[in-house]
Length: 274
Length: 289
Image (cartoon, rainbow over all chains, first blue to last red):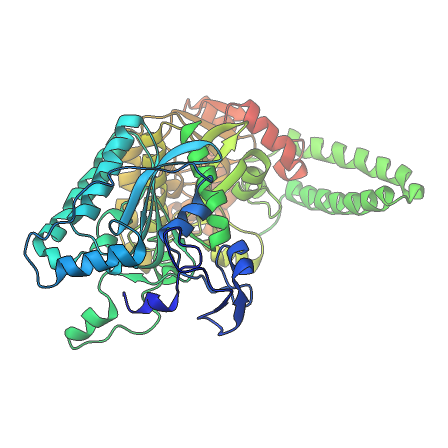
């Protein structure tokens, strides 16, 4: 997961020291795109419709009102419960590279003035994987949403549960799933947005428990990633693990191009809060 | 398969309506020469419609309920519901085109909307499975109803089906279980649910989304435990006896009201809902849908 997003250097990462490139090559059609135009098109290729993967800050920008975001639970410390080889070094390097403290950003934002709790996963942080911090932030996001009576939107992009925290990661699946259940019992809505790619322990927990699930067109998604499937000696046929296939099988409420996601979210939030 | 006199009248009314809308286009385009003819034809159509409606047999009503131009759920949704967004899938197996489910606003008030959809053109009918819902359709509606109850928003249900899908694939995924579970669970949906039969109320296919706080029927819709053809075929071994069966089944809205099964009849324009879809939608709104 991590190797592939180096091709998609973030265009406007707030924390990036490097100035954004003037031109970018579309991974879909290899055409050169002017970065400014690309940004105006919400990072969707105007030539072939390829949806660039977004950084957390880009996703926030296309989803919420400008300057409406207030971060929650930033202080949760990195931990290494298994003393897994090279794990702390790797996470610290990810912090430096991405400017993120962990693979999910959580807090409160607004969409056309409607306040909501938002979580956004960052694929470039250790493959967007879920360890204790990610699970804890997602859970606290939902618990705080119950306290403050806010609807919840979580945008997922993840390779799955984080191997380096093993069983502790696995337990985050149950913890976040339980939190989603409590949110529903409290009468609050949870919209899960599945973006490219969403896999494994994230897919098999809170990401699939949205009352409404919206998937971004063309997103890859599934339970076990291609490399895991190959270990079994079998092969996943190409093109099977996509948002489109999940939609056909009744797993997804709406399959939308990026530009239509924000208006749909707005209608849903308005519907839930009137 | 002989058409009744009224069915024949209905056909001439359809032809008249078609000529009227053609003339209206011409007059609206500035061809005033046709306006006198238009008024004449409109008057004749109204008289004919009134004559038809004054003596409809139950079978005539079945024919009206199945009329190819009769407004369908999607027509009422676009006429009555603002900012509608459709939600798909049962999170189990698939998405069923025979039922439309989604969120929208009725006069500014959030409502969950469920409507069985038959489709008109051949590709549409195939995509909507002729309005015959499959297990995933019923399970999809329950998912939406649970969500509406969770948020506390009311539910509007439009019933229009010849019956649930009864082919092997639906059997293998538990069509009976899906209909049974929906009826059980609709009793515990803790928000107002208003069900309206807008066309065909076909048996289990209809009651599977038909348990609500209020049950309404459009004036010329029907609601029955089986289609008249099915009843005639089973009881009398002859589907051709459908008119007699329609009579015996007491399937009209007026019968259902007399039986105390429904709360209210929603009036249709003279001649049937297809002669005034917007008027019918307005009547539905007024009736408290």
